[in-house]
Image 1 (spheres, helix red, strand yellow):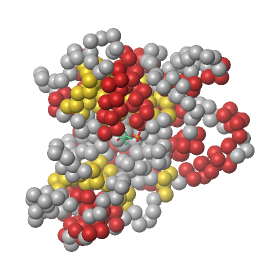
Image 2: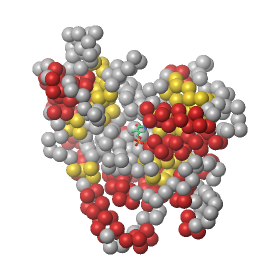
Image 3: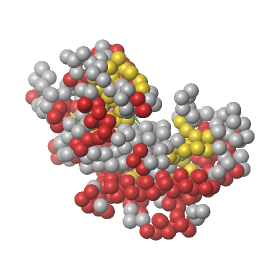
Length: 436
Ligand SMILES: *Cc1c(COP(=O)(O)O)cnc(C)c1O
């Protein structure tokens, strides 16, 4: 059996331990929800205050030049590039993930508009906003959205055919934590003549991503999850350089113009990824995002040539392995089962559990109430409701920048207590909140 002492020994040997000092985390909180909203970098309040009081308050409009506001989306994009296997000049930070998905999917569909390909393929279990955006774009542009299970991508009966225009996938599934093999799937999509759009919302800052090595076409991702950019932080968009000069941006605002300050009446897109920008950028929010990005890039110091993500990945897998082992050793008989793949190659940086109530196998899973009881104890994970295809899920994100092995031990200890005492059955934990 694994012990608390084992976990403390792992923390003592952890080369990344010091990275935790970059964050403000409440003392009574064990935060396992960095996959939904990353914690606050210590540098953020002062940096944001500086942008507000000095750059805005004193610099005023001069700050577009003097404080380098103007090229902030590109400058931060270069930082994101370092964690997603892209090159400088290939990424911009702007808008939300949903809006960026609209832009990149439109661009990919435009490239296929003269072919007979009329299908956009995505996973049934994809994050809903991705499916909603794809649904409306397909309707508008005369394509059909086909939803599949991941297993249908493989083998001789693969859905990838000469009818598929775009394969749009989220690299790490938000509910299960299952991770796709981006390189193999991209190659299969290309062999079938389709373009790929990858959503990196649960990948950027969580797992190593190698967009150029995978020869992917388009990608987007989220700034406020593992990149710790703050609530509603700007997202990012990437395009492979082979498409960079050609793709069409539907939201053709002046910030994506080749020369916005010439104020000409006709749109002429900026040469590369800059055309992803639409309007004036949220500078204060971008300043927060930069603080978050710097916390991730700080891991580069621990793994020089291989970049930040190689070092973080080793620890992330050790943390999720430990959580799985402790749940299996200490919560046996409580009806929990593992939803996230055991295979490292298929696992993101989170662990999801489902539950069949052993006292009432036909009854509710109790997953929502168990998560609420844990939150009341300061152990913050989250819950995702099931449907006819998927069970209810208890979701725990492990951000290697600030989670340690003793934290894993303590979170499982709380889970054991919530289950063994039946604490979760209390009425207060069974009332639904607006945001789960
Ligand atoms: C979190 C997440 C989003 C979030 O989109 P917003 O526009 O930031 O609300 C989109 N897609 C996926 C796959 C996500 O996990």
